[in-house]
Length: 117
Image (cartoon, rainbow, N blue to C red; front, side):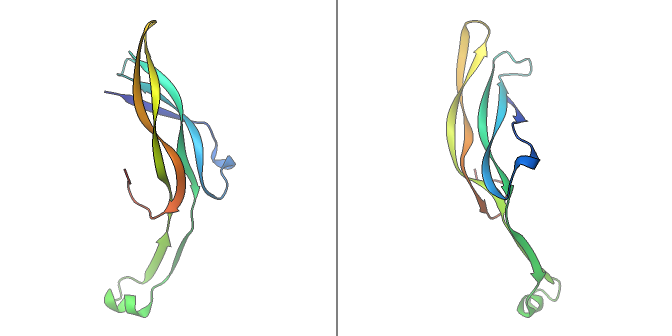
C-alpha cells in the first residue's frame, strides 16, 4: 500500500488565464507509519478554460419537449500527456526502494470528464 500526499508549490493568485503546468510536492509513504518514504516534485494542470451558456435553439427545445432550454459549452484544464518518473523511497539508513509515478507532461483545454487515464 502506498500513501500519497500533496503540497502545492503555488497559490491561486499566481495562476493566470489559460491551462498551464504547475509543480507541486508529493510525499510517498509505503504505509501509514512511513516505513519507506520519499518526496518529489510533480506537475499538475491548473488554470481556466472557456465556457458559455445560451438559450437553446428551437430545434433543441422541440426535441427535448421544451425541457432543455439552456445549452452550455465548457472545457476543463486537463492533462493531455503524462510521463512516468522514478521516485526513490528511503527505508531507514541503508535500504532504498524505487517506484514509478505519473506526472503531467503537457496540458490543454478539453472536454470535461472524470478521468482520461
